[in-house]
Image 1 (cartoon, rainbow, N blue to C red):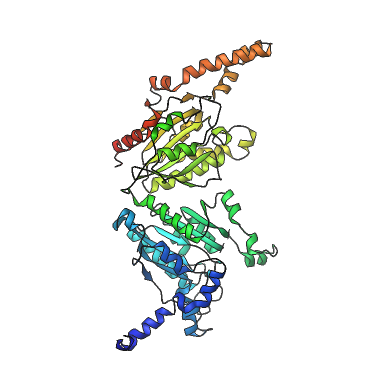
Image 2: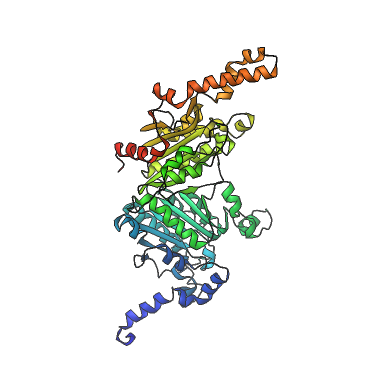
Length: 509
């Protein structure tokens, strides 16, 4: 068949072949030896088969003046970055809603460094994403700026490029998911950190400077594996989800993107009656709220972000009858559910992202309020906790608040969008309890003189329990509802139905 091809077409096909993995066997085998995939293998796994339209495949590094052109065509294929449009999850959400753009940095080309044409390709796809409202998935592995592009004679420092601002300008316009495996330093790390949601494998090292830049700054020699290991970046909130490997990271990227793509048809859920016994009878006991979330949500739909960062508030995505919903929930097994500065800041950023892309919000509240004390103030609590009120006040999407148990003070208000009247519906389980501050603290503060007057410790404790019981009766869910501080008290088994009805009334169908 090849004999029938015109010479120019045959030359083109040979040129394209030089950009593919089979023609770059040494680079491919080196990746596989480390347990990694090639850039094109990641690309093929991410996108729907046959849907990828590539941009700039024939680009090479701007080094023709120092290297043989034919060698550049293979060793610097696509100038180290694969860009294009595609569909992702078309079988799940339909062809139109699955449109996307993809960027895959190729570490097998000059350590994934960013060169002249590399930046131009990145700019082009970001501009298309802006114009066509395409979400972007970007694989960010790479070593940052490239000093060896000798063909470029019209710049000195190369700081007049637009890539970082073009990528950042997509914030709030289209969802951006970053995926990393391996080394991600300098400019590549800046791209990673600008994304809305960041996934990294367990073999990731992410830092705003790599070993060469650190040494050049007079800060000593460091191995790349000493810089920004993933366990550190997960603890400090840089990484939203840690994946086992590139295949797992790719599946997570597809799942994350699906929440922004809309409703799916097929779903199941667990028996809801178990929610009636989810809260312990002793109000002082904790319970696994993730189990509550997984029961309310469609089976297998709960995906959590930043699990070990800001642990007092859980953030993530669920589906209800196939509809994607953003979720925040207090974890009473962390700080008793108190909202500390880190958790407040984490939740505020999450709400801003979800609001930008029209995801309704479900808040499951069980908190004694904001974390208090000198230690909390040392963490800039005033400023950082206030971010949760600021984010709540700006929400355009509907919020449904379900009070599972404790709902005290400013922290509870912040969990509900800033006020109990901010949600389109605010309902409590029968275990709900309400107050301006935690009941124990309110008794100690409000009845200090009475308690101090009891000299006998046993009598003092008995009085404390009596006052506490009286205050609980006043602040229990049914009483709060009778004063219209919440809209209703509901059967826990009806939570899914209540949330869906509330969202339907708000126009979310």
